Length: 123
Image (cartoon, rainbow, N blue to C red; front, side, top):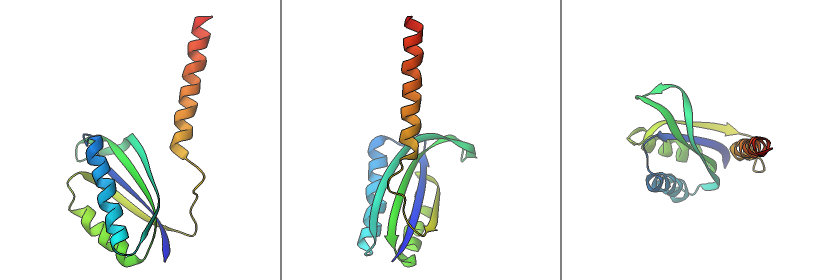
């Protein structure tokens, strides 16, 4: 089995319940074909570098998958016809980085800066 990192960008107007359905749908496709979803991360709504199908933002979902190439092609075949998705990308990796949460650290830094600014304003 090979290791893959797979990222999906869903439309900005996708509801949280629809995002959950998307996560479950593609996780089931991997598991049904004897693959394994090692980690699933919801990165949230972020700005796109350029307009994609008239969308400025997208909901990012990131999978870390142990699977064969056939499973990835099945996954991408289903994503091509999904109207809620803007883009997807699969990258083969040598090992997973399961410790680092890149986007949570950014949010924590932001909230700390806001707290410091609020504290300075009160002085």
